[in-house]
Length: 406
Image (tube, rainbow, N blue to C red; front, side, top):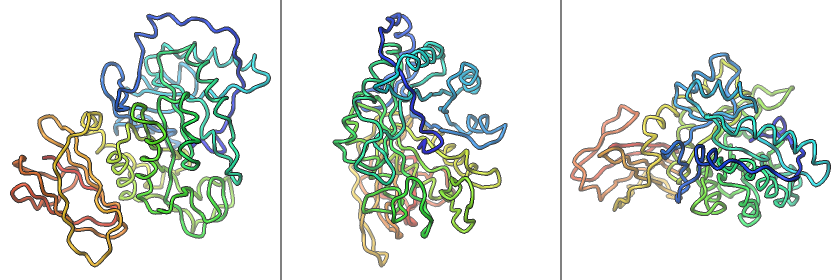
């Protein structure tokens, strides 16, 4: 979410464009595969990215060490050199082409693209953030689809080798968002559900204090919005979720209410990330860490989640494994609404089984249909595994996540 401080619209033009040498395009080309996973430098790559890092001299290095492989960059060679030295990729926002006064801005955009298009750390370009979103005027579109799509055609003529990224607001109809698909090889949405009750009016929140607009206002809305973006994108574009790396109250420039400063907990961060994976996203990006002070635990918690994800990055980038799982629920005294959501991926010769509890209540469940596996071990947690003859029984806390190696 680029929001007030990052919503900048460049003015550009569509004069005659130069032909990009085919050798450059072939050498640097990055594109989603048929299932949306990006192939980068010849390898399928699951993206773990950041819009910003906390305001610390060591933060970018810490991000690299934790396993992040993508960072938003200012449009300079020096910024990309810094990322490249740490083994990270980058992207920059270019804005969009307006209908008037295009020539000067077209020159600026061309200069940016020609400066960076051959940099080994460049992964993709972005046009505008949330082009459909107008706060308090939800039926308006901030930037029409034709303008974004026209910009995309301009960028691709200058640089056909790098994909285009478009982050959409979680609101609007699927059909409205699909009108922007010609400008998107990667479709994202930002959903930030950890919001204190009673928060004062602020940008991007509805009058009821929520950012999303589904009936489900719990943490598990993250997975539903991932599904929505897959419906927008179709099967062959990449889909990213942009996750919460801030406390909403900290976005205020002044007059903050300390009682309203609510950061996502480590458990909430973990659930939102792993649920996104279960719902088939091709990358995760966190927004808002520039608004998080060093004394807050959030940065360390985000890094801990990313360390888990990075340990199994090759598995996350691989196509799913089909398993004949059958889930049997045991009564905990609560109704069952969404239940357990799961996904399996190949992990070398083993199988990675990821399961999340999309309920706000505890769930007790037995997974059957795992008879072809001899062993099961919990990953990232020291906990006993109730494994007997191809059946696995587990009790999940509300919005809990479990990952096993089979």
